[in-house]
Length: 445
Image (tube, rainbow, N blue to C red; front, side):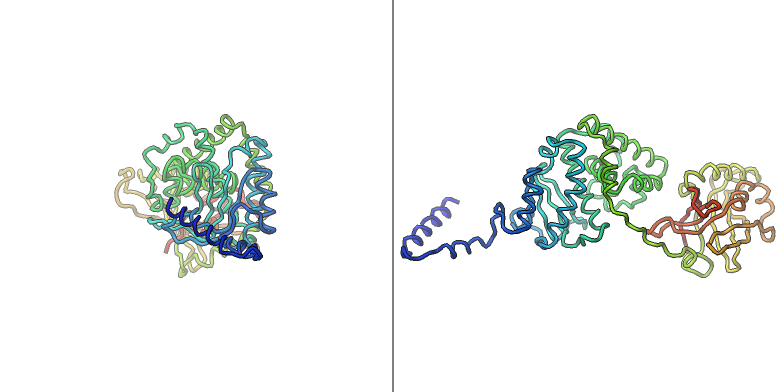
């Protein structure tokens, strides 16, 4: 390094002495700034960032390209300038300002990272994953893939903001650790870099709110905080409801620990912070789901619904338990699962699969059927009437709970959500509003 410095100095000295006094080199010297001074205010974007981030929060947002700031072994590209201010405005509104309002001026000036680096492209990893953000010792946060974000697309913006909150959760944890009991809840379940191999359902059943949360305790904590704050309580609860009993219990324990951590370690009312962010979120109209019966039924993409106990709504679980207990009466045959078919005749066929008599819950299962006639009104609300023809008389004798549930309610067929992986019958009241009771299964062919 010293050699380069000496040679550079000598070159500059000769250059100056080789110029005539009458020559004005100001313009030529200015042009040497082709890399860009990262600290100089140069234009409307810089002025706005200085006013909104640097002055009130002591944060520098860097978007001008400096290759040394990112991993030199990766192919990285800079952010498009027209995206800088719109995305920065979201960070102000959904991160800095809510925390400032809840935690105060001292907190928001001291703890957030002092540099935010905006990067246009993704950083691809050797395990096939993509890095969305990173926090370098709590001092610098790097946000990637920003060129892919349409500032007018809330879903895309929300994913970026989740990354922002995830990285800040790391910073908080690095300053004041979450209780060690948090990591002990899933001590044997963390898979480190193998987390991409987990399915969403496997992660939930283990007690992780996302697949990435299954990598290690610190990421688990950061994901919990980010999902609760950015996606909100309603979304969080809907995910927890998909988990089995073990997963639900662990995730709810972690939620309690997160709320307690923010209160005891930082004096922050987590629920108030969460609600403050929720109140800012735009009203996003839900995407209409396709008609369930367009793809479900005899001769269609899916011919039956597979129902396991873990796939019932909490409200239906007690009914399902009664159904299982009741069917055991018939020569000691335990129920394994059910399948629902919509036949070409329009009837509903319910197949109840049971283990051999006296075998408990072992052995090959066989099924008996119950049939129901279907009536559909102009609002696509369906009702069912028990059909004696074709139905198993022995099964019917010991299936009052099941038959009464199906014939005693009004339903709509629907997908569970936009993933289109589960769907079924949802109970509605006399006004056509869903009651929360549902019989949801996995469509299969």
